[in-house]
Every structure is written in C-alpha cells, then in structure tokens.
Length: 262
Image 1: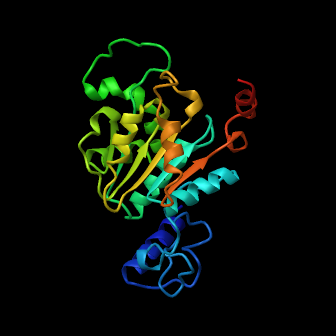
Image 2: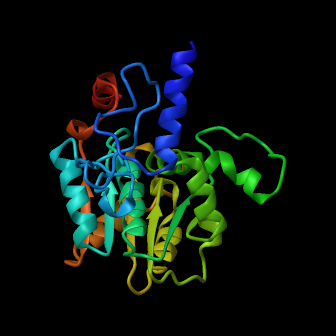
Image 3: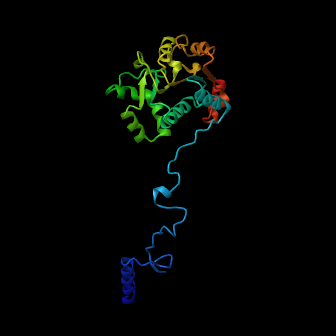
C-alpha cells in the first residue's frame, strides 16, 4: 500500500514538472489515461478545427414511388404545385418536408401552413380556450408532419420567431405571402372561391403546394372546388398538377386495398 502511494506521488510530481511519459498511459494498473498530445493525436481530435465528423442527423427524404418522385420534382421546379391523390400517398408529409428543407437551406424566409377548419362529418360543438386552442385539433396533422422533421422544441422556437405560421383558411384573405413556402392542406374541403383566394396569395420568391383528395371531401361534392381548380390549372404550363394513385400509397397495404373497393 505504501509503495503504491509513493508511485502515485511520483507520477503527480512528474506531471507538475511537465515531464513526458513514454507509455500509452500512466501504468498498467492506472485507471486514468493520458490525453493525446498534438504529436500523438490520431484522426479524431476534440478540437473543433480538427474534427470533421458530421454532428447533425436528419431523415433522408426519398420518394417511395414514381408518383412521389414526380411530386418532389414538381415542387423543385414549379412555384405552384397541386398534388391530388388518395389517403396515404404522402402528399402532406412531402410538402411539409420540402418546406422545412427550403427553410433550413435559407431558400425561403418562413413557412406558412394552412388548412380549412372543417369537421370530418360530425359537429364537435364549441371548443374551450383561445383561438389557438380552438384551432389546434384541426391543425394537428400539420404539427405531426413538422415534428417528424424537426423536434417539437425547435418547432415551438420557430413559431415564436414567426418563421413557421400555421393558420386556418379563414385568416388568409388580404395577405401577400412573399419569400415563403406555403402549404395548403386538405384543399378538398375548400370551396372554389376559397381556393381562388388562397392561390392568389402567392407572392414573390414563394412556393405554394396545394394538397387534397377530391374523392374524400367533407363538404357536399358540389361545393368542393379542388377538382375544378386542378382541371383549370393543368392548362397553365408554369403550374404542375400531380395526380397520385393507389400504387403511391405508403401506409398499411390494406389502405390501398380498401381505397380500391370503397
């Protein structure tokens, strides 16, 4: 025991005097190992200037079908894109993911997400709380898509800074959205007049993606304006209209089977 204490004292004294050690550590039985010096340092270094490792992690956005590949290409090449297709084809997710990608790359200054506050076939009555609390159940799918690409803490911070805005369709009239990535979700629940108003909000250096399923509207079929709007916009060369099919569904395989018979 006395010999071990003497050895440790000698090592501490030599360390204070700036002595170097020839071995890889202080000794065979030592639990504390020497930090690498600049001469013995290998490829990794705790110094930031010598550390080339990738520290960030982000899900790679890859299309899982030809229709999704066409949608991603349309978003990249057109300032206005309309994505039509059945449930589960990734319309909302891909649009929100491209919006986050554009914001992170500095291509746009903010993200504006909007969808109509329409119940899915039943009236849920009055909701308690402020306006944000009342609209939260309707806008929840957009939060889900955002949280899959960003952490909820970062989503909250970006919303507090005004870089991400989630608003119902009713609050979009009279606005001009410049330098923004706009996603209009569940557009099949918008009337022709509402969609015309939303489409004309597009400003300079902005991209707009309109998503929806004309066959799954919660309005009367005669009131939904998405199918009519999409047919009219197909005649404009600068606007992309992408129609997804059952083969582009990426949810449970039963979803594609049900869509074919329902």
